[in-house]
Length: 141
Image 1 (cartoon, one colour):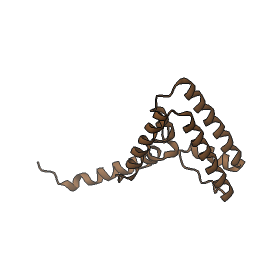
Image 2: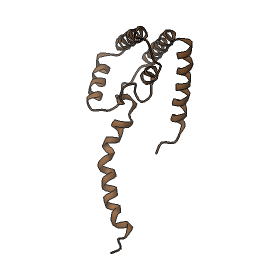
Image 3: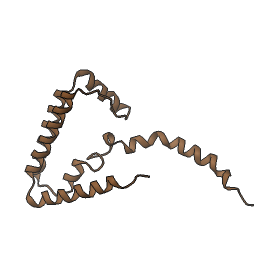
Image 4: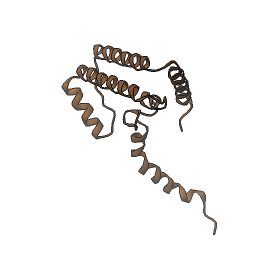
């Protein structure tokens, strides 16, 4: 018995439609696993940090969270909470001042974290960043 290829088409379409709501949960950087899809957390985890370095990094992260939290309004914080529950990216409608302040906090955090690293770890981090950039430039299917 020979089946026609079009016989499977409705089933394939139904399967794609059924799986499509799950795709944003796996591809949304805001809700990715530890280190946010190859972001700073994953890079630093691959640098074989000492316990002292890990403690310093944790302090920097906590300080950064507090500084960023102080920038958001109560309404924006609620929007973030709801978006997280729904596994969506929040639309915060940030003001230009908020954007500038958040960028400064992130840059300061990055500088502080890099200052904790040894020369060898900094070199390794730069290699990881290059690999991450290359992966980002590759077409996604």
